[in-house]
Length: 145
Image (cartoon, rainbow, N blue to C red; front, side, top):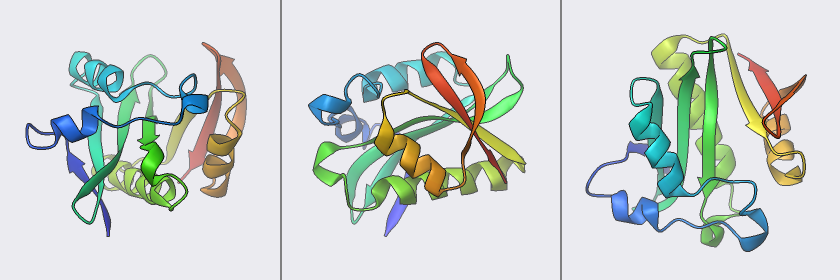
């Protein structure tokens, strides 16, 4: 069973060991970079370890983007050893549920690098659609809840 757990002293090292494939490194922030952002934006960032059967398989972080006034799927990283097993889809569904339950959101935005076809396909399969906005080298996608 896949679940989201807060990043704590008990699972921090496992989260920091998460790595994507070499060909994905330009698309995804490292776990350390993501946690540094979560620390700086602690009032509006919610990072979670993605866990399955006692193993840390990934990291997902949701946030509130104050400048634009919307909630966002900010980070999603599944370790290279666990990719292709449905953990990204499960983590995304759990992250969406977190935002809907905690904040009663009606829409969620995310950004994806133009060359990241796998992420685009995953987000599209979960209902995210392009908004036509491109900023900071990312294409914006929106899910209407």
